[in-house]
Image 1 (cartoon, helix red, strand yellow):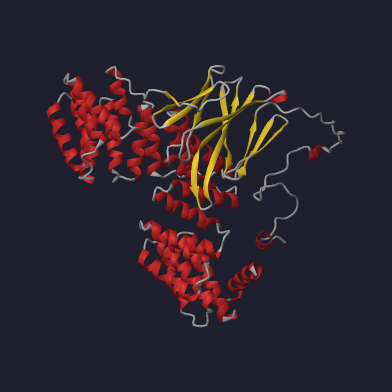
Image 2 (cartoon, one colour):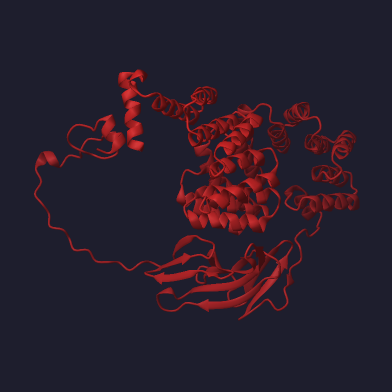
Length: 559
């Protein structure tokens, strides 16, 4: 059928539309509308789909698909009311078409109606139980409602259906990120970019997770990879600039913020970030100009007032700074930036107790805010949460400690090894097994531990993970889901490589030791004519061939 349709397109181009039947012309016009939509010409696409809908001979199912396609075009134009109306029309004509519910759910999700969107995704999945996109979309809706367990479950289902889905893997990584599980986020984002090396969202997500772990250089590398595929993304330049800023590479940060403002001059946050960078560099006049522009763009944002207040403190004008802090706190009584800036002013003015109070308040409002930490540590205040051992969690010399939102497993026998234990459900972590390999994998250990219990549609499920530990190097090669309910991982050790088919639907390989060299017999040399020793000429078809290039028809249809 695809071949006939494609040939019909060629016939129309050669012979004209009068040579083709009316219903075929409608089909071709619908295809033309789809091409227009694919190249971004939304208005032309809508006009063409509307023409097709004027054909009264269309069957209900075909008319429904055209309504669906025009609804997608309306959604891309942000004409959301028209999009929903088209999806509603399609449902009346063809109520068993799962894609309609999936698309309408996406529009509802885009306008913030997550609960209504979930109902549509439920219907799509009921009609098509193998509908990968609907599982991923429902997972996104659950994530917006902070129902992380259900989101993880749906993304895992989508991944089990299509293990190489970069979108589903990145979606699950972002849920892990939102639940403060950076190692799990890195694991899934790495799988995503392995499946699709051009998937910028995967690199961005992995970079954000690395920032949480304060691996700024690695995060910058990933942001740079993402930028390579989205060269005009204001947000990516802002994120990479922020990573440079946290690593105190101020010149590089300034360059990224300049680029972000060039792409989007109306970004208030870009002006705030550049203003703060200018202030750190001592270029205070430029900093104040940027803050003023940010306030002009977003007069009700407390951040610009707070950062300008901090800058005034560096200019020894604390009274102006305190006025800006009052403005910021009136706009947002829980502004972490405002408490940080006031704490800095108290510190400059010699009011250490008041400074510590405000800086600790800022941290209580935003535990990931690094600026208050710098000042508190300068004042001699320990900002790192005290480690407390989790009673009864250890095994075979391993002990588990909690520190703030994190757990870590350590062993006195392997003092260089630290295993992050990220909880995915209710309960406390517990070491279950420590298995050190022998023979060709000597020096590799597998630590198995419980990471909580999650509620699913099948009931409560215990979740276990493993850490693959290279004892000799003192590092963790990777983390995997060992068990989730009745599903367990499969580990295959062979030729220096560990292959893990995880309980969460993915497959990973770890080259832990050098593979055995396989001797290869030398092939007999053939005498080659002198003109054949030259490298063949490059051809645009991706390989070197002799003879004439294939025709366009042959390239399209494989003949």
